[in-house]
Image 1 (tube, rainbow, N blue to C red):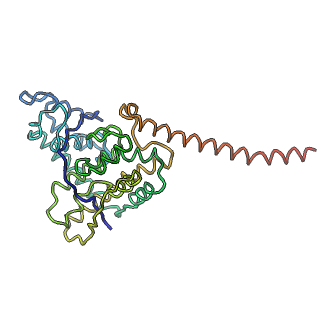
Image 2: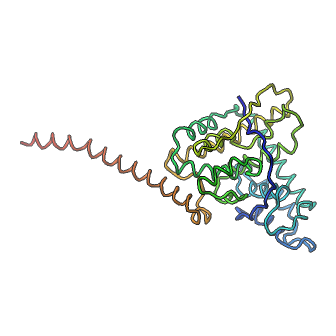
Length: 318
């Protein structure tokens, strides 16, 4: 059954802070929009630079630089960017850059879907894990991920859960900390929502990424995120693609998160945001402590396995 977070009254979208670039394209986009709009752009031939980067990218679905650039352009057109002139949202070159990146993302999704079966098992497993097994550290990390994959403006329940966990709900605050697959889930959702037809049959294209997982994590903080049943027949190829593309990118983001935790590692990237955040820095330490405890338990087990052998050898010596 497909679910969606029930729509609620939207609060005014706040501008997003400028993220740390992850490569030359995202750095160039930031350099352009932080310059004066009435003067020639700081970076010349930005559109050509982006086209070359797309051609040279090994996989845009996991390309930190290109995904962050697209996320940035989406945010510029939505709630805006702190310190950036809002008129940049209508800039023709930036619009062409966005089209280039979205076209490449669309093609990559279609290519991946054409050669692999549709899977969403990691998303379901992550939702179940968050509901029953996740530690406080893992819940804190996932809420930070949720703050990037979804919008607190359209999902105020998420903002409540973040506040109860002691986390920041400002737009993009944890963007530097999340894995590229989380960013891809959000850029894919934004791209598909912009082209979705009206009506309930298109609701899947409006889902926030990892919606069921967000509801599971929020429930652990006694916050109910209403889920509506949006299941139903998908009658057009466009809607089927939207559904399958969303399942794919959600699966990739969920799988990365679960894999990190199953190896007693943080699902977040090391960055200044983590070091300066009391909750998430404590979560990272807690996850490392689990790894140390597992190593110590393993060492004790090996010692106990060796001890009887040594005792038998001593008895035989007598």
